[in-house]
Amino acid sequence: MASSLRVLVVDEEPGIRDGMAFSLKRAGFVVEQARNGEEALHLLRPGAFDAVVSGAKWNLPLKPGREAGLDSLLFTSRLSSVITGLPILHVLTPPAVGHPIEHPHLLQVFASIIKPFSPESLVAALWRAIRGDDHLRAETWGDGLVLLTQDKAYAENLHRARRAAESRANIVIEAEQGSDGERLARIIHLAGNRKAGPWVTVRCGAEASPDGFPTISDPHGLSGPSPQRLREEDDAVSLLYRADGGTLLLDEVSALSSAQQEWLLHRLRDRLERGVGRTPARDIRVIALTSKDLMAEVAAGRFKEEFRYFLNVVPVRIPPLRERLPDVFLLASHVAEHYSRTNARPALRLAPSFLLALARHDWPGNARELESAVMRAAVLSKATYLSKADLAWLLPAHVLASIPSDPAERVFRPLAEPRPALPSQTPGSIAKLGFVTDSNLEAVFADPQVPVTTTPLGTLVALPLGLALPDLERFWLLSTLAAVDGNRTRCAQLLGVALRTVRNKLNEYRAQGFAIPPAGRDRDEE
Image 1 (cartoon, rainbow, N blue to C red):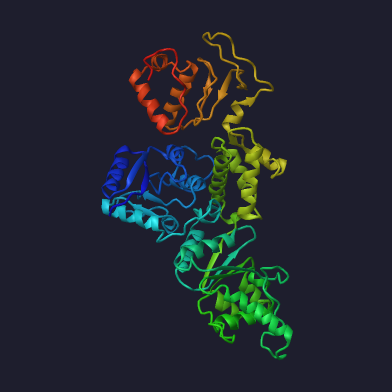
Image 2: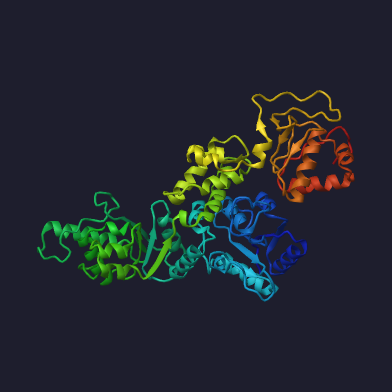
């Protein structure tokens, strides 16, 4: 099948990456490659690609202390903040040939294909991912806050919601306040065949609000055709007619009065046959949101059991964050990446102490509270990473004190005032550039994605352990080139490589969007 769609293939193994790229090119896709998740994130820009094939491995559960490399789920979390709704096909490797995959529930949430596979199977799986045949898809960056999970129970609920999206079956979403149940309902609406139909939201229990449900004082009309009853009836019927062919969202359905529940049950079940000269509304799918257990409400006499049966055809539950703490780390990464991109800042790293601090909070406000907390920490931080100190306002002092400090925090502490570099570099002397170690040797604590440009040769530069070799190579070459004022020949001599190698690498980095220092004094540079 011919296609002009652009696909980015990401895999650390060159042979596998080249093989997948070749298969997709033969199918008509325009393909580019990235060696790892960090390189892919640098290449990705809105509109640059139509889909991603990721061969990054699953390393689950996500937890503090396991941060070497960027696994497939964390890559997805950060990518969904960069480009909303970009289809991602995950290429998974079973633990051993003939053995089942370790986390099968994730196949219900993310488009995937399991090795080994044929070129035809890869192409077919990618088309399914692009069409969104089997999985819910984000429409805004915030949708990631309800679609990103590694929790088994929630994954099964999301899969159930996707299967129900194509039908007109009514759905009840049980979610605590702040869990973004309304956002999930909207995603379900857009995933089904009624996405072009109307979307009508009713705030139950808010009769005075413009989008509240009208007061129903006499659901059976026993009081006769009084002006008040007819006005209430017409207002309610008009509201439901607006939802014909689409979705009616009943927000906090448990707040409806007994009369409102009874009126809705009869009108929805009987398809709104009332109305002279009106075409009956026959195609309304109801999604009801509730923060309460409707069975408990029925037992307490506050909710009609028959109405619950009518609504609860497909139950979907969003577990609170306190029941799925590993998702906290995933969502925090999603929010931090979004903040960095939208504010043109280098990607904020989440230090182990920051993740541990997040895990010590029980998040009563769920995803909305987490989003606010991470955003606040990002806004107020002047560093390139977030640590437990950035959550001092959230947790009691004794809780923060019990969280181990990060290795970088123990080694580096900011100087009160940066001191100037030494005028000359001699063996054993280190430039004084604003960070000091516990042994009183000074160094630059660098972000591997941002080469240093004002640092003289001989400076001690600290980089995180576990950095991918391509990232290390790029950082060292561009930083050294800046230190020698763009002199390519001198840079090649210092690094012990051929001048041609330096030139080729610079062309590669320029194509990736990195700033290249201008050529220096030697004229054979370009």
